[in-house]
Structure formats: C-alpha cells, structure tokens
Length: 221
Ligand code: C5P
Image (cartoon, rainbow, N blue to C red; front, side, top):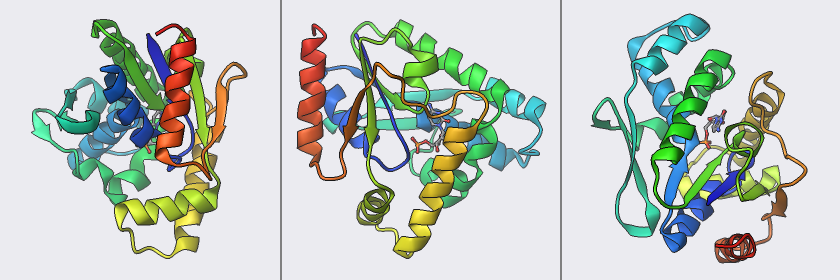
C-alpha cells in the first residue's frame, strides 16, 4: 500500500510520516530529502544553478540513499556514500533548493527514482512531499494534504529547529517557499480533489497520526 502526504513546508509532514511508517512497518520515503541532497551536490560542485542541462547531470551523477536508522522510523540520507543528513537541512541548501525543484529535467529524474524506490520496496510505503498524489503516485491508496497556518508553521520551525530567526522573518521565508512551490510549471504543490484535507494547526502530532492510521485502516490495511 502507498500512503502519500503532500503539503506546504513546515506543516509537520516528516514527523507524522515517520511515525506512521514506524507504526505500519513501512518504508518512509522523504522526497524532499532527495531534492535537498541534489541541491547540496550542485552547491558543492559550484555549478550554475540556472543551467538545467548541468543540473540534470548533477542528478544523474548523484547516488542518493535513504537508509532507515533505528528508532521511530528515523532515516539517514547518504549522498555518494557520505552521510549528509544534517548538511541537507542547512539554510544555504533550503534557500537554493528552488533552482532544482523548479527544473523540469531534475523533477523528471527524481520522480523516476522515487517510483523505482517504491517498486523495489516489498511492504508498504509512506511518502511525503509536494507532488506525490498528483504526479508521482497518482494511484496511491491513501492521499492526504497536510496543512497548517503560516503563523503556526513558523512557530513550530522555531521550536523544533531552535531557529533564532525572528518569527516574522521566518513567516516571510515560509510564504515565499509556498509561493515558489505552488507556482512552478512542473510538479507544483497542489491539493488533489480526492485527498483528505487535514489542517493540523490546532492538532497534536498524536492526533494527526491517529487520523492517518484510521485512513489507512479504512483503505484496507
Ligand atoms: O519537504 P522539504 O521541506 O524537505 O522539501 C524541500 C523542498 O524540496 C521543498 O520546499 C520543495 O521545493 C522541494 N520538493 C519538491 N517536491 C517534492 C518534495 C520537495 O519540489 N516532492
């Protein structure tokens, strides 16, 4: 069974997807980590981030591994054999990511890799990202759009990451990323009509996970 969770940055997709994957003994597919790893590779190589041909080569040459690492479905991200789990979350990578996320040649390659990963997985897959219900796994058994207000997402980012950036600045950054994610020509963040919409602004993590588990059960887990 494929369970896909789309939604804007900071809504809590990773946390609930990991918890759900742990509960279902499923493979947790963090597609954002793949865009992040390729962005890190492009930055390290010092290539022109606006050259789509070069970006495609950066992706073709990248070896990305999403490795389960113990408790609560946590996963480590390896790039070309190196553990880059922390480095792909830096501000520098987050700021540069739109160049790759908006590049059709990059998306086409990463979508193919995501499908191949799911195909190779013998059990269930819990995947999270932006275009999973609409593009990557349109036949997924469970589709969820996880949302939260910009204010709440900025507040959580501060609490979770210990980010000392002023709240209004974080809100502005999140809104900019929303706009970039929603307005790109290929693979934008969209809410497909058949997805269950969950606004988790006033929900606890446990409450969201319970709701997701109920959807999985209803879909015939
Ligand atoms: O989920 P996360 O915030 O780690 O994703 C980082 C960025 O990667 C997102 O802001 C988005 O631009 C891009 N992304 C994407 N498509 C996905 C997952 C992530 O474009 N399926």
